Every structure is written in C-alpha cells, then in structure tokens.
Image (cartoon, rainbow over all chains, first blue to last red; front, top):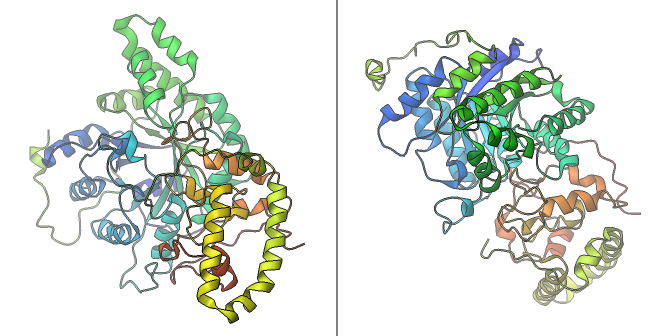
Length: 332
Length: 176
C-alpha cells in the first residue's frame, strides 16, 4: 500500500500511510442553522482524532447536511470525512456534490448505501438509491482517476479523494461479508470504517477471512467502536438501529452494574474492545461513534492509550485569502 | 421504483429458486432457443415481438422472481434471486442493515435478497462465481422493456460512457 503516490494527501491518509494507529470520530450533525453548533461538537473531537466524519442524515433522520458540516469544518482547518449516502440523491446530484466538496477542501469521502427512509422520522419520503454504494465508490474513483463524469464528459480539474467505504461484519450473510469487502476494494476503496464492534469473536473470524484474501494489505480497516450509556441504550440500539449487533453478555454486564456506574462501565467496555481489536492483524485504526456523548470520546481515546494525537500536523493555512473564514475566537 | 416489492411467496416459485441449478439449466436452454428464434421474429414484426417478450417476462419472471422489469436482467449472476426486489435496489451485495435472522431491514417479514442470493449462487454450476462481479449502474431508461431482447441486441451490456469496469478473475463455465 505504501508504494503508490498519495491519493489526496489528507491527514488521515498520511497517518495511515505512516503506519500509525488512526483514530476517526463521528460528528453529530446539529438540527440547527448555527455554525457554532457544528464547531462546538467538532472542538471536543478535533484534538483527539485524525479526521471527523460528518454524517449524511444518519438513521434517515434529517440533520444539517454532511456537505454543510464539511464546508464549515474545512474553513476552520479541521479534517472532515464527507459521508455520501445513496438514499437521498441520484447520480447527477452526487457527482456535482463530490466536485463541490473537493473544491471546498474535502479530501476524505465515505461512500455509503444509507439507512432506509422507513427507519427515520420521515418514512413517507421517496427513497432514491439510484446508485448503490459500490457503484458510488467506483464513480468517485473514476472522477478522480479518469477525470470524467459518468457521462464521459471531461472535468477541467479532477478531484482528489481518499475514498472510504463501510463494512458490517456482524450481520448476515456472515460467511460472505468478506467478499463484499473484496468488491469494495476492487471498486476503489482506500479505507474502511466498520459498523459498531461489540462482538470480538465474530470480528476475529471476519478478519481471518479478510486476511486469507490478502485484503488487509490493500485497504486500511478502521473498526467502529462506541460507548453504551446503559442496558436500555444497548437494547434500543440493537433493536431499532439497523445493522447493530450487541451480544447478550454485554447487555447483561451493563444490567448488573449499579446505576451510578453504568456510564463508566460502558466506557470501560469500549476501551476493552479497542485494546482487543488493536491486537488483530490487519486493523489499522478505530472509528469512534458516540452518539450524543461526544464528550466521552476524548476519555475513551485517552484511556485506550491513543493520546496524544499529533496536534493537527496536516493543517496548513489556506494559501489563497479566504474571506469567508469563521471567527475562530468565538468557538468555545 | 414505483412500488414496494412485497414479500411474496408463491407456490412453487420458492422451491424452484431453492434449486438454482434447475433454473440455471432452464436459462441456458431458453437462451439457446430464443437466441435462434429472435432474429426471425424480429424480421416478421419487431413491435409484436417486443410486446410478446415483455408480456411473457412480466408473467413468467413476475411469478417466479417477482420481477420488477428493470430490463437488464442479471438473475444468473445473483443466485437466481432478483436484486431489484431489494428495497434499496442493491445490485452488488447486501447493505449493512440486514437483521440478525437474515431478514430485510425495510421489510422484516422478507428474507434479505442477498442472503438468499449468496447462498443460492454457491450451489450453481455455471454462473455461481459471477456474484463477485461489480455490476454497473442501472440504466433506468430500460425499465419495462424486455431484458431478453436487450440482451440479444447487446443493449443491456452498455454502461455509462465514463464507466470503467473492474476486471476480476472469475471462473465462469458459461455456455456448456
């Protein structure tokens, strides 16, 4: 993986290339038109991770767009990962958005299928799914490498992206999930962020299959982790959030914990899982998803021994004068 | 997609789909016979031929596979399970939302199309490996046209002009 030239020269890419254990974290997009709300959420993540994922209507619920969040983040010198889901936009909109994102300085893109509209708060909406996640990944790769739209029309300046894809090793068909990963790698994925890992056994088995195909040498794999607040939160996640698998042992462990120490126990479980996945060959980093508890991310990363991150090594002041830059002094 | 495909289980169709080798055999025979007949039929009356094919596909594939008439059939590459029955129209494998019991995220009573597709393709003799191919974006203009005719005319093999296919080494014995 190390011989080829840098895809996009993003901070995340450089961290992974250098062989360091990467940390990314998910930003909860606000239900607000105020940029301060984005910066407030980003601030607690920025110093403890290498890139910040801006979700694209996660759980099919409407929030500020990934595009909007990324625009704000790049302006302030943060390193975002633009999440693009196939649920809401057709190929025309997506290709246009990719160009727009690249122009704003976004260098990492995560290509997703997307949760279905029926799980969100507006189930009566029309689902799009014009492309699927692999076709989206391929389209982005073609735009970068061939410098054309899907129509064949030439781009004056092609974008440069470090391209990511998602993987869920924890749901059926378990014995074929690694083949889906192989497809994503063939389509052009540079890095993978997985669904929440709570079942280390299933993950080990998955990684064994991934290594058998040699995929761990072709793609960087970041394992999804996150803290559980209580057994109720765990129960909610495994029944209502699509694709989340939490084994009974973990729910049971939280149930047995006294109420005051549940939050602490959730963090401890998360840290234990990080320590275990770090030992697995082919794992290159973690992706922390702490829905509505961003303040715990720093603690988790610190306790897992992944701190300090190098403080924004990739950040450079934009060369051209940027008249629209935010007043950083106001961010608290 | 105009309507949500339902979790249909018609008599005989599930049994047949669980025996993909039979369907594979039928496909290969039909391809050989129809491929010979089609040029003659087209010469006689293109409009009539088109109508006949579309109607037959709506009936036969509709009954067997709950065909959504996308006009670019890849059934033999997806374990004889129609990927357009996936509510998200995924043609390259399952999404991450499959339930622990192997059922669909969107329609809980329907088994995930791709769980069935992988399992069935592993039991196919000729085209089983083709499930590993990367399928190009769907041409929505072909909806409600005949997939057989599109195949004979080479229309279904056309990809968007900018599309660059991924070369994968797979073993397909193809036509016996």
